[in-house]
Image 1 (cartoon, rainbow, N blue to C red):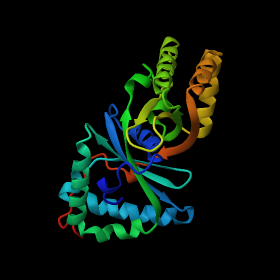
Image 2 (tube, rainbow, N blue to C red; image 1 turned 120 degrees about the vertical axis):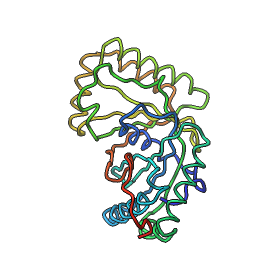
Image 3 (cartoon, helix red, strand yellow; image 1 turned 90 degrees about the vertical axis):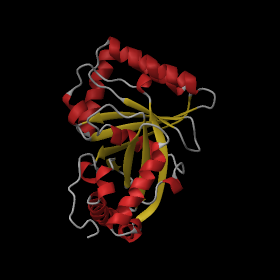
Amino acid sequence: MKRFVTIAGLGLAALAHAGVAAAQEAWTPPPMMFVYTDHVAPANTMAYEAASKDLIKKVRATAPGAKLRWLAASGMGSWYVYAFPMQTLADMAKIDAQWMAAVEAAGGPGIMTASAALVDHSAALIAAYRPDMSYTPANPRTAETEGQYRRYDYWYAIPGKAQDLEAVAREFVALYKANNIDSGWRVYQAVTGAELPLYVVVNSGMSPAEYDANGEKIDAMLGDKDDALFQKAFAFTRKHETLEGSTRPDLAAMGPAPMAETPTQ
């Protein structure tokens, strides 16, 4: 993780990972999230994880670093995402300043060299949570609340058709509520990026197999109703992509950090 503000808004790939990370939270998803993603060559993933954990330990041992909070996730394709909760866009500069203060307190930019050297490329953007297009079950299944597996779908709207796609998302919410489905989803909208409008739907599960089995159960319950809505959504979509990943509590920073007596060590 390098300095944040200098690269904000450079890419779209991180957005779905914001959704993956957000589900890791124990509270309601925040209005926005700053999402930073490192893309690493498969051969370097083990070394990258070791270097990143060492960097996080050093940063979290400082006074400014102990105040930072972020979620983490990783997935096939060797990406690692770090998502920082935000209330407003103004928080972006605050997060950047706090991170750099923590790095300085931990020994300076040199502490990031080991992990940075293993990164093929990075991307960053800001994602907004869309509760109006998301569905939270009244009584969610265990996999919904405890599972670390995530499936997320990129929906790139046809220019001028974003409002239509959003309307279909709300129809999905109404359908699931009417049938008391115990499986929900979160929707995030890209605030920055070159391929807007873009929405990402994030689903949870215990594993790919459990997620697929649950999907078949829901299909049986809804019959053709959900299929019809998917076809309606595709009419307003220029591109659709699916990715998989899992939350990474070991790379996250959600609770208070232990303070070292000598934080630069």
